[in-house]
View 1 (cartoon, rainbow, N blue to C red):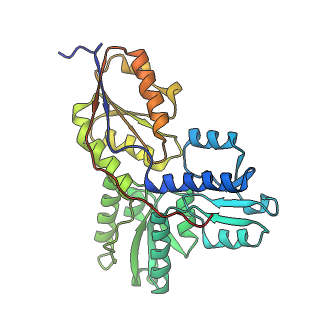
View 2: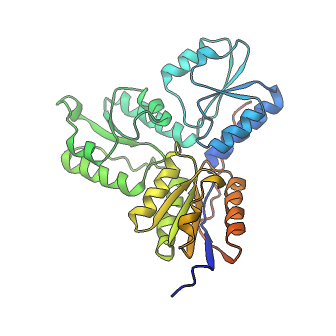
View 3: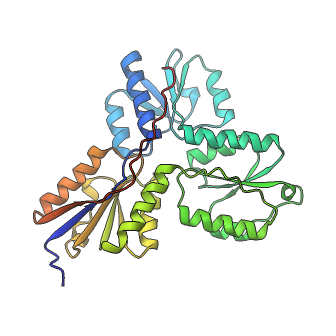
Length: 311
């Protein structure tokens, strides 16, 4: 029987920020360097409370609408992207716009535009009111498929069913999305399924890494904020594969009372989480459980980089 007082901390790779997040944060850093503060950003640049707090200290102001931005200000679209209507509203203001939309999200926008031009009706698999979903679904009239139950019960008109296709949010659960697509294919046999995959490489790599390691774990800690779709999906992935899991926004949220009885603790982080936040949580675990062994799991080496826009 394993000695539970000796903790094995499995640091899962890959984890942490993806290329789209790194690019978005680099854009803010460059804009602050060039223009100073206040600097305005639509929504949250990425879904992580720690990151947002750090930038607020530097004079970044996160807004919901372009109409609240003072004239002659600099305004950044978040990594989640915005709808064409939102862009039009922003351009009417006397402000300078910098677009930090993740190129992988922008790719889905372009797919949506192309399908719309070809008169397809798009079934969009995503989460209601998520900013990425709002941006894509603003391109044309689409039907939102937000879960398996919706996929089984959605009703379409005969006109919509003439030419059907599917797009997905980039940060979904791979397993659930595959199941939803299978259901839709059975219900609508003529639906066109593009060979282009919308779920981003980082989301897939982090979920694959979790699936690989969970048979060795008693519990998985996912560093990330509740509003981060890809972080929440990591928790769901672990639970679906038989491992208890907790979302940990900061070191204050570590479930120490539960961990006392666990020996093998996995640690990963969502694609919007800086490594220094993950290390804060690792350090807190090491302080609480000084008898520990760190085990670094090998994973895919992510080499993706995205070019910066003109700042």
